[in-house]
Amino acid sequence: MWFDNHCHLTTIKDDPAEIVSVAASEGVTKLLTVGCSVADSANAIEIASRFDNVWATAGVHPHEAANGIEGLETLLTSEGVVAVGECGLDYFYEHSPREAQAEVFAQQIALAHKYELALVIHSRDAWEDTFNVLDECGVPERTVFHCFTGTPAEAEAAAERNIYLSFSGIVTFPSAKELQAAAKVAPLNRILVETDSPYLAPVPHRGKANKPALVSVVGQFLAEHIGISVEQLAEHTTRNAHDLYGIELPAPAGG
Image (cartoon, rainbow, N blue to C red; front, side, top):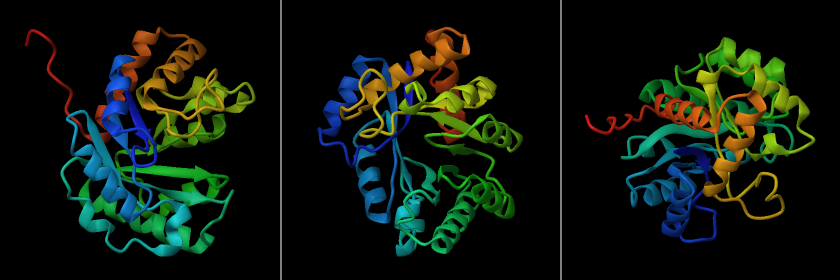
């Protein structure tokens, strides 16, 4: 069974019930839908509330940092919210000024500490500053780099800080050699899988809208790449997701 620990049910065009049902048919039995603004986070929380196997985050993406985080804190105590984010730094697009990104990132790190929630980080072309902000603010005990795209050096820097790494469909791209090398040095107890759907569909589905059901494709590639069975990777990544987000694992069958 798989846990898609990062998708955007608020932006996938299909009906959420259909998305969840199709995912379950492919063994993807748990999903985390992620907020990127205060309004989007509220929508994510509402969608998650309809399902027993879907949880939500509340956060402000670096693209939205110029708008601040007013109203975000009140969402963090909503039922089903297990993390702050996604938040962080994006120097590739810079839709918000870098100063605003850093300030809003630091504010959300503080909220993760205050509410003892996991922290979901988006970092693109900003590794040095991302680690600097984390070190200055203190890395929350449960933190993940979503859609990790770093090199082995960034993977090792994350491991030193006990940060989880979530691999998306990008790891299946033939051009992603550095990322694939990073996957081999990542601790198995810190690896997760995600789709980031509707974005970043894995090979051989590139060019199509992504969906949570395809997290199994990411997992199958990753298992083969690092040299373990698909069953082992599914078990580890699902357990890791439960640990990261503080979600209790179901009791084994038979008590």
